[in-house]
Length: 283
Image 1 (cartoon, rainbow, N blue to C red):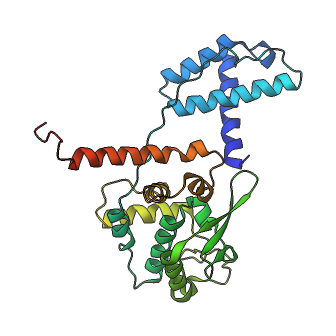
Image 2 (cartoon, rainbow, N blue to C red):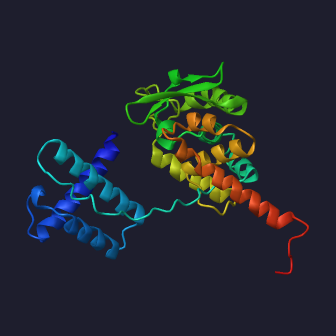
Image 3 (tube, rainbow, N blue to C red):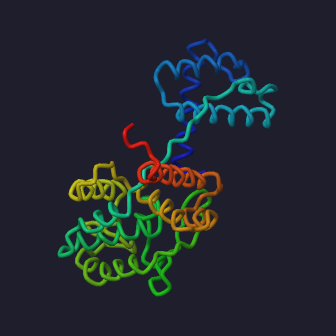
């Protein structure tokens, strides 16, 4: 698993163990379902998010299975526990008009503006995660054939992502007119580099998008993932196959991608309610 996932599970298990010691329990063999239930209830009273509680319980479940597999425990301390139901919120997306406003926000006369325009264009054209964008190397970009090779996720899985002509053109302009002016003696192979000549950080991209959204008078909270959501939703509304979108996004499970079908249904309902002649406009 990724380092981030391992760190989260470690933190969750340590938190559970700390709570168990307050119950005078210092050995996993002595942990029962009631003890874990009490911990979950404590988290709820402390107003932890439902998703966070579900993840913490998942970590303890995996721990319990491991202990049984290793012969350390006989019974699963989590077997009788029902976790909190996580309701999936529909992702926020930008309209095509808002995307265009965002694309026109950077100053095309400065190296930074040209770079930022290329980043936004590539985000919307490829649906990359911000971590994938910042880690993208020059050799992973095939402008002639208009695709990227992205390596990310568990096991460093690699996928091919098409980028489209608009993104290709924006990257070409960046590579020829902007990147050379940002290069420093120790600049590596990163595609997008900062003013210091280093690979652009995720934080820099977050701040950059926030500032351009304000400049473009976009009221929504614009973060890198909102461009990923917009990419997927706009593809789906244009008729793209869900399996193809799953592959481009790098989702391991199709159910993760299916959330965008709910977004599209919601949009269609809103359009019907707003424009159908039989709508009750006096309500």
